[in-house]
Picture 1 (cartoon, rainbow, N blue to C red):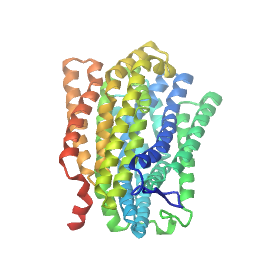
Picture 2: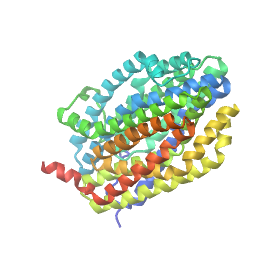
Picture 3: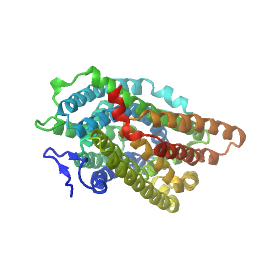
Picture 4: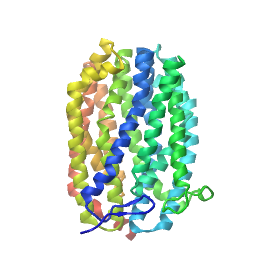
Length: 457
């Protein structure tokens, strides 16, 4: 019987041992970390909604899609770095791993500067683009600008976590995220309930927590001796690695930005219905994040597993793990969706007891929650593609279906019906279409030989 290879540095060799146990072992810490990540994201809305009011909750809610749009592109680039590191780790090429790691950090530092500048400078313009309510605008601007002062810490944490997970270490990022999440909640309560500060203080609490999580990750990576040890003096752009990171990461970045753009268009149409709809939509996004827990966790496990095993040329083993990871994500996401469908009124009341907010929120939950299995399936096949170095496939699917088609559908139904319920329906409709496309691609394409074909070019 094969034995799992857990290395002294805390990394996990996923090319040997039971695929099912390995994926679960990797995914479970990620799922717990995602619970705390979601608490991290939800704390601001929960505390702001209960301590300050509906307008302040709408301000936090309106910033969500814009923040996602700006940060998601850079996260996609880091996914490209993760694919590279997983591949070279599977090949046992430590020199290539080190060069990929240091190039990834060079990209992160440049990204932090760009993200901070864009986020702070264009805040009012971005919020006007999504039809932010005039009563909410000043509050949203203050929250948004403070949030983006912590951009550098965010990208450094993201790239550090990506590096650790690429070599199978999902435990330490969990520990660091727990610490920062609890700190964020404590600071939210201190700043808003204790000091009586405004909505901007929720963003300040998030920034401080992001700095702590980044410092913890960097402290670990700066230790000597591990395969992914970081040396500040070695951080630079290695041209060949930068090209590969862009090749693998740019499609993921574009894909994420496409999803973010589509969500902004949805947000802009929902904002037309006023602050109650705004608050409900933002609250739904926070609650829905819990449906993403199994999706995100198993997707990260799938990408790392696929990358390592295809790097080691273990094609059938990669397929077995992919099937198990997809099934696990789909089943767990649907269980969360069923629970959300029935608990929606109570969950929205935790954030805001205003009847109009609850009514909007419950209507959206009842429209989308039972279709989370489609969402999970689409994201899981996208994760397989990324792990196999086929990042352009999900980029084109998301661009065509989750952006172009979704936006076209929304504009048509809003002009014909002007009913927010039809806007909510855009999600399950586009999830279904993308799932059909991904199903065909997964079974008809030769995705397992992508790296070999690349080497022969």
